[in-house]
Image 1 (cartoon, rainbow, N blue to C red):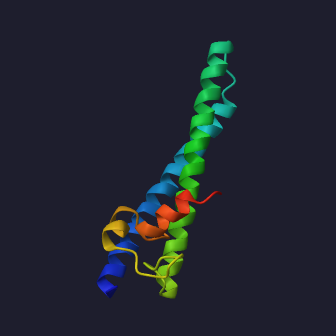
Image 2 (image 1 turned 45 degrees about the horizontal axis):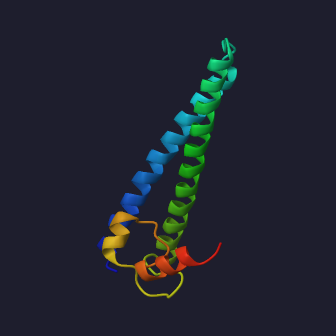
Length: 118
């Protein structure tokens, strides 16, 4: 992979990382406000707040996972192993990296990993 390709993906990853951090900070603030809101009047209000809380926590969890994957990809850029499949050690296709710049596997190995029991 060429240096300008690496720089392109680094910028993409850093931009996404910043956005996720802003999202996490905003969601955390919203959750704190929900927890501090003592104006839950009835069971319907409580159910609504509980549902919102569960949804926000799942979104936060998903964003945290993506943030971890982005940090791993940025570490790979630093150590020179970015864009190499963790399973077959072949280059990951540019199109795949453009769609998912923190991809760990090439398309073929991703399909194998998804079929394998967890």
